[in-house]
Image (cartoon, rainbow, N blue to C red; front, top):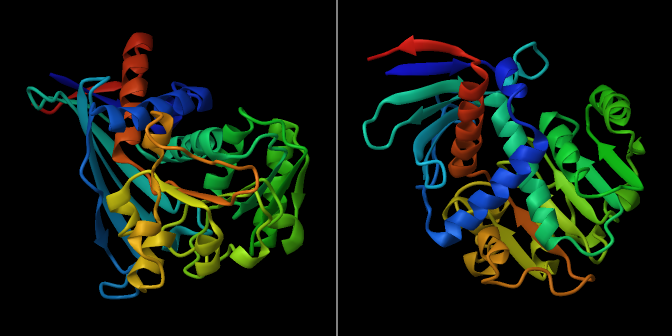
Length: 329
C-alpha cells in the first residue's frame, strides 16, 4: 500500500512534450468514446474575482477517471498572483492518483509541470485539427510559462517562418525571445506591431488579462485563435467573425474563460459554441471547412488530461524506480 511521491524535477525527466501531445489527443477521443468520467472543475474563489477574502488567488479541483489507465485522480491547483515576480510560480498544485476499486492512493505528485505540458499539448492538438493548411506563422500574446510550452508543442507540428511574441512586460518578452530562440532555433520576434501579431496563422493568448487582448476586427482571414486564459482574452467581434467555435468541454466553457464572460454578459449565446474538439477528432463533427475561416478553439483544461499524463508519468517512474515511497495506510 505504498504511495509514490514525485517532485517537479523528477516529473520533468519522465514525460516529454511528444508524450503529452499523444496522451491529450487520446484523452480527447476518449471523451467521445465514453472511456472518461469527468465532472466540471470546481473553483474556490479566494479573491480572484476581487471579492473577500482578497488573496487574489483561486484553487481548482479537477477529478477524473481515465479508462485507458484504469486510474482515478484529482488535480488540485490554483493561481496565486501575489507570486508574480517572485521566486515562487504563480501556478501551484498537486495531482493525486487512486486505485479506483480500493481507494489506495497510488501517487502524489507536483502538478505544475504536467499542467504546463498538457496545456501546450492541447494547443497543438487543437491546431492539428483546426488550423488551416500550410501554417507558417504564429503569434503568442503573453511571454510566460504557458506560451513557452505552447510554442514547444506547436513546434513539433510546424516549421514556423516567423513567431511573434508580445507582452506588456518588456523584459519578459525579451527573455522569451532569447531563451526560446536558442532552445528551438526558430525566428522569434518581440513585436508590438498589431498588424503582424493579428495576421498570423495561429494566435495563442496566455495571459491573466481581464480585458480583451485579441480583437476580431484586426484578425486576418484563416486565423486559428486559441485563448488559454481564465478571463476575457477575446472580444465580442472575435466571436462574431468566427465561422466555428470549439472548446474542450461545453460545461466548463460556459462558466470560465473568454466565452463564459461573453455569455454571462448576454452578448454571445451558448449556441455560438459549435462543439467539443473531441467530436472533431472522432470524426463526428466537421472542424474547419475553409482556409479563409476564422476558427476559435478554447481549451480551458480538462482534469482527464492531467490524470492521464500523471498516470503515464507514474507508470514510467515505477519502471525506472524513481520517486520516494510513503505509507499512508
